[in-house]
Structure formats: structure tokens, C-alpha cells
Image (cartoon, rainbow, N blue to C red):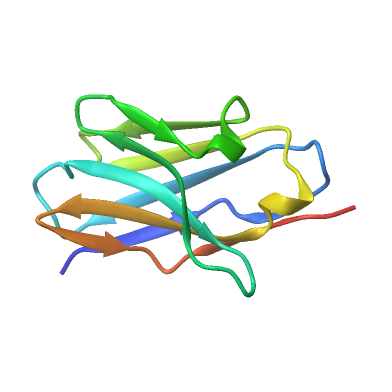
Length: 114
């Protein structure tokens, strides 16, 4: 059974940084695409950033220049370095892995508040 487990969320002040991590288990092949999505209260889940197995990245306009996605294909892990955080970045962040089907983690809460 494929599982994705996120870690690294928490409470941070505006302008601060957090690093999210996601580790996969139960799969021996590398995901074609791994990424991060987020869902704020009352809003739909939205793409934050993705990275393909060949290193191609894609970012939401709202996080470009502030967030950096990276992955370790050997470990089937993906990371999200978040800098210059804003209150509007507050959401539950979900890890995603795509290989034939889309797998999701359980989510980790990120709260940006003073």
C-alpha cells in the first residue's frame, strides 16, 4: 500500500520560513510527478508546486520566488522550502505523488500569523 507522509508544518510569523518534507513508502518505482497542494478553509485545493522525475518544476504564481520544491528520486521524497511566508499561505499542505494514479498524504497544517 502506497503511503505519503508529510512533516514540517507548524506556526510561523509572517516573513518566516518552514520546510515541508514528504516521504513515500510502499512503492519501488519513482513517481512521475511529485508535488505540493494546499487547501485553506472554505477554499478549493490548489496547486503550490510540482516537480517531475526529470527535474521540471511548476509553481503557482502566488509562491514564485518564495517557495522552492525539490525531490530525492532515490528516496521517493519531496520537499518544499517556504520563505517569506505570508498570512495568506495559511492552509493544510498536501503531498502528492503521481504514478498511474494520484496518491495523497494526510496533510500538514501551516499557519502564518503574528
